[in-house]
Image 1 (cartoon, rainbow, N blue to C red):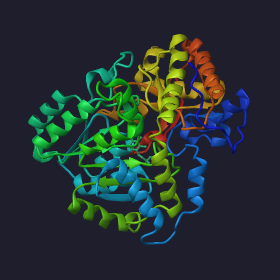
Image 2 (cartoon, protein in one colour):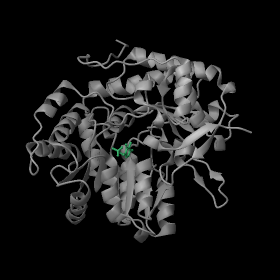
Image 3 (cartoon, rainbow, N blue to C red):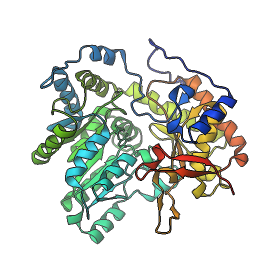
Image 4 (cartoon, helix red, strand yellow):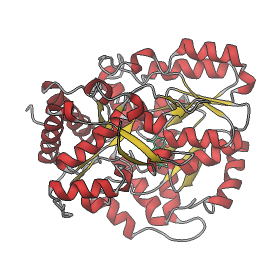
Amino acid sequence: MAVIIEPFRIKSVEPLFVKTPEERKQILKEAHYNPFLIPARDVLIDLLTDSGTSAMSAAQWAGVMSGDESYAGSESFFHFEAAVKEIVGMPFIIPTHQGRAAEKILFSIIGGKGKYILSNTLFDTTRANIEYTGAEGVDLLCNEGMDPALIAPFKGNMDIKKLEDFIAKTGAQNIPLCIVTVTNNSGGGQPVSMDNIKKVKDVCHRHGILFYLDACRFAENCYFIQKREPGYANKSVLKIAQEMFSYADGCTMSAKKDAFANIGGFLAMHNPELAQQCRNLLVITEGFPTYGGLAGRDLEAIAIGLKEVVDENYLQYRIRSIEYLAEKLTAAGVPVMQPAGGHAVYLDAKAMLPHIPVNQYPGQALVAELYLQGGVRGVEIGSLMFGKYDANMNLIPAMMELVRLAIPRRVYTQSHIDYVAEVIIEVYNKRDKIKGLEITYESLALRHFTAHLKPFEE
Ligand SMILES: *Cc1c(COP(=O)(O)O)cnc(C)c1O
């Protein structure tokens, strides 16, 4: 059978609300051309993020009902701890309310002025938490990962030569930690190979640098390893994940991604002293170490989600459904990051809108147009998200100008995805008429969440 069906059926539904094009025009204007400021009710197909937007399973909802809400030592914590340990094989498991809370705790201890944290590509909150401590985040992605049109199996890999050179130049004593993002969210959801993980680990350990994983999409990454990396075709995704984590000194995770939970995250590690320091901070900012900012029911949902996500029928459907959208767009000539990522399709706005200069944010202009055309909400991953200013306030643009269409897990059906493809192709066919945007308000950190923009005027 060529058709891969959704490996679930629907027992509970939510309505969608359709707006007219005129209404959407007004809504977009009121939202200052920033999709984060559009009320969700006014969005038809919401591809803003795959974070916290998963449909939970019947088993997870049952877990929610049986969550143990004891303050200390709840049953649900032990279920959570066991489920995480089975995958990561690390002795210290610290629950947090989100991935960024785990980052905040880790980098408050590890970071600081004069230090460098290395990565393939840091996610935006990860970078922000690093920079907030005065440390600097450094992306050392392989060159393949920077070419959106290039087809290669592991475009999320870290560049080993760049890593060695950076350590030689900067001095290992100034580099406390290297964190590899699997899959590489900000770099197109591209996977990292096991071979690359091993090599990065070897380099780090040779220099006494801690090696961590940003594990938000570990299962999607491991499925790609199974399908693409020699020697893994006959290993289960769980076994592959266990091997991957065996190379790491620790990890941060947002349970809002591959754990199918609506909230939650964790830190896990081998080092007992560091774990103790993290727990000390956890108690101040998140909560007691057996709940860390989560209700018992959330811990229960995560524990069950972590078991469901390594199901290979699910992963086959998941990866195929993203690929399906990318194939439709590619066939119509739309420039799409190749190959399709694990959780999202990334439109190459720079290639699609060459007439809009980077300081008029072509990615954001495309995001606005997708909403106007069909009520589809995506997010810019380009110079609005990652751009900086030089001393003269000229924009230092991001590496790429992408629009991410993240697909929530188990939420939309194939006909929803067919509709999204139609909307994008209609926008593509009138791309010459799309105009740039300019910023009218921005905050100091993570400006893309709250920025106001308007159509660019000469
Ligand atoms: C979502 C995400 C985070 C942060 O997790 P939150 O739960 O949103 O705080 C960190 N890293 C990556 C790669 C992510 O995708």
